[in-house]
Every structure is written in structure tokens, then in C-alpha cells.
Length: 539
Image (tube, rainbow, N blue to C red; front, top):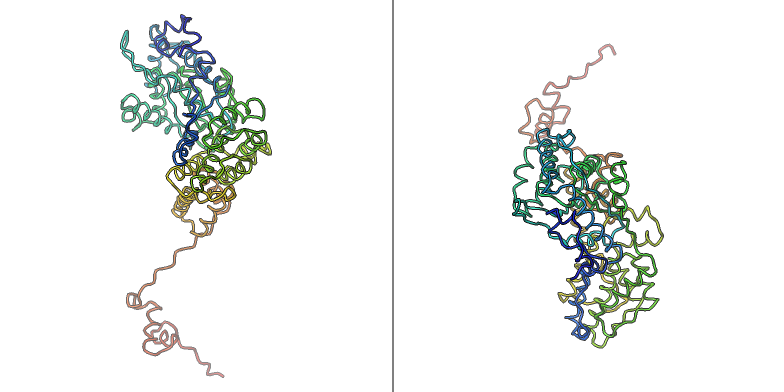
């Protein structure tokens, strides 16, 4: 591939070994070509037998057709990476000063201490936020794939450079967990033992200082923190973690890119310093595609990958139906087109001569059946209800379901008998749902909650938030318990055999009397436990 800028040279980049070994800077057209991941398609394949075509259709699950905003992301990432390295040139004193400052912070056990070697900070940051399914994580992974993750330097210095690192935000906002995850990732990547050295018998403050020093020692270019919305529900720890990320950028000089859904926006705007750094190169807010030129171009490109026979022409009616059922979310549109083709080819395999024409009716039926678990999100987007839409953080459950559908179809599972009969989406998703409910029930029983009460709480939480993960659902249930704690039945007293009771025990006295044919009162009277009634002779 030829870069538009290969004949040009920038001295500030060429004189920095951390930048000089990175791939050449590319123009927009070259960036698009490097990002696109189109499925293999040969003109002869629509004529293949149905059982082979199903495998061809499955290729769509891995395709990536970038839009202009994904190209912009790649362009901006390249600038962020290189600019961050300007202040850490190993051929000048900047890099050594960073390492010296790191040692002072480790000795003090804190990132907050003043350091003796002031350094120029050229690092910046930007946030990538958007609704689920618009391709944030996939796009970032495609961008990261354009760069080597590790570069080994041997001369004039020996150093293992880590160009980028991608982590997921810890679900509970734990800064300790983030540090441990960081050390684990670095250890797997370059075969070090940082977890063993720094993740045990160390306070969080010390661990943070070690993590910052490891990032500097290996010249970490960019730290990507995905699923940043996980911090939204964390009551403790989220503020400390966000503060640490800001310190990485402002003090250590490592660029940070948080990625998440729009519900993470309040987290990133929590303070002026966070908002300022996260908009250093302009935050990117990705919404679903509106009906129009961008959507039409995307769908026409996707429509070219048809393995149905005969080929269906994309009409305005089909375009409108696919948009309505996906609401311009690229991931949903790809899945809908893929599953519609899979349905037709599966029916054709069972009924020779069956038409494989894609219709609006088919699109509606497939959406109703296979995309049922995201129907509430689609409804919220269709009604433009941003409050409801913000409740949906990801499409993982749908991705797992689609994987089951594809494996069932490719593996020779029973094809649908007709287009009118929707697939058993609820049945396909049941194992994951049942497993999640079982985990919640076990946890509640361990807390001493009665089984019937636990089942009611779990059912209510799942009904109110069908797409919630176990952690979110447990937080909801815990809040309900605090507001109205259930009545926990005391355990029944253990029954002790009569002959093991003390002689003076009333139960033993009554039982022995009963055995001898005496009434309970007479037995107690004979034992001297009760006194005989006093007779009134005066009467």
C-alpha cells in the first residue's frame, strides 16, 4: 500500500525512535483501505449448494465496512499517538526525566508528590462515545491493528516499547483491579512478571505508582479503556479511577482514550480537568445513522454481499424496512441482512425450488424473532426516547444469540419450515438467561433470603431490565432489599427425643405420665410441679 505522505518527512517524528518505527502516516483513502474488512465474495458462490452458502453468509458476521467517522478515528488516533511521544524522546533528557520522576513517586508511594525533574507534557486525550452497535469497539480494534503492539529497540538503547494497550473498565470501579489487569496484560504481552512483583502485598497507592512507572518504562503510547460506562453504577472507586486516568495524561504523559456508551458522558464530565483532557483533540460522539446519504451508501455496500438465488434488488421499501428494524445501527443492520439470507437458504435446503427473494415481510419476521432481545432498545430509538435508550449499554447478549443461530444453521440444525413461523428466539437465549438467574438465586440464598422471596426479586429485576448484566441486576435487587427487607423465617427448633430430656423437663414428665395412662395434669401433680387446689372449708 502506498501512503499519500510517504515522500514527505517531519523532523520531530524522524528524530524520535519511538515514532520513527511506527507505520507511515496515511491519507484518508489509504486509511479506508487499511480499515475495511470486506467478506470474501465470488460471483460463482450464489450458485453453490445451500449447505455451502450458509458458510458463505456467516462471513458477514466478521465484516467491517467503515464510514467516514471510522476513518476520522484512525486519523485522530495516529496524531494522538505520535504527539504523545514528542515529550518522551529517548534521545533527549525527557524520557530519562520521566523515569527519574517515576522512581521518586514510587519511593513516596503516591503520584501526588512534587518531582525534581520537570518535563514537557505533549500527551492529550479524547473520548469515543456512542450508542451500542455503532461500531466503537470494532473500529478501535481495527485502528489498533494498523500498529505493531510491541517494538523491540536494541540500539542505541535496549528497550521494549509497548505502542498501545487496551483494557476494560472494572465493573466496580476498582482502581486495584485496573492495575492488576494492566500488569496481567503487560506480562502476557512481553513475558514479564509485574503481577508477581507489584500486585501482591502492595497498597493501591503504591500499585498505582508502579503502574505509571511500568507505562513509562515501556514507553506506552496509548492506553485505551473500553466499556467506561461500567463506572456509572460504581458507588465507590469510580472517582479515584477517573482521577488516576487524568493523572496519566496530565502528569505521566501517557495518552488515554476512554470508550463507552453515551451513558458514560456524565462520568467524563465529572470535573473540568477530565472534560478538558478528554476534549484535547475533540471528543467523538457517534450516534446511529440517520436515513439519508450515509445510510444509503452503507446499505448499498452491504447489499452487494448476497448469496441468495436469485439476487434481490434493493428497493426503497426494503431500505425503509431494514432501517426501521435496525434504526440505523450498523451492527443490527448487518445482523438483520445476514440472518434474513440464512433463513432463506435454510428453507431452500429443505424445499427444493423455494424462492430466495428477500422481502419486507421476511425482514419484519426475522427482526421480530431473532432481534427480539433488543426490541426495547429499537423501540426507544424509534420513539427517540433518549432516557430509555441510555439504559442499554451493549449488545453482547444479542451477539451470543446470533452466534447460536449461525452455529445451529451451519451445523445442520432444523431449518424453518416457512417464513411466517418465527424462530424460537426465546428458547435460544434461554440457557444464558437461566444461568444468570441461577447465579442470582444462589447469591440471594447465601444472604439468607427465603427461596420464594428470592425468586420474586429476581423475576422483578429481570422484567424491569431484560438486558441487564448480573452485576446491575444484583445492585437493583440489593437496593430493593435495603428499602424493604424481606421477612426471614427463623429456623424450626430441632426436636429432641424424650428420653434425652432432663428428668425435670416438663415435656418428659408429661410424656412419661401419658405412657402410664395419666393425664398431663395428674402427671405434673404427682411430680410436685403443680400444687393441689386449696379447699375452702369455711364454705
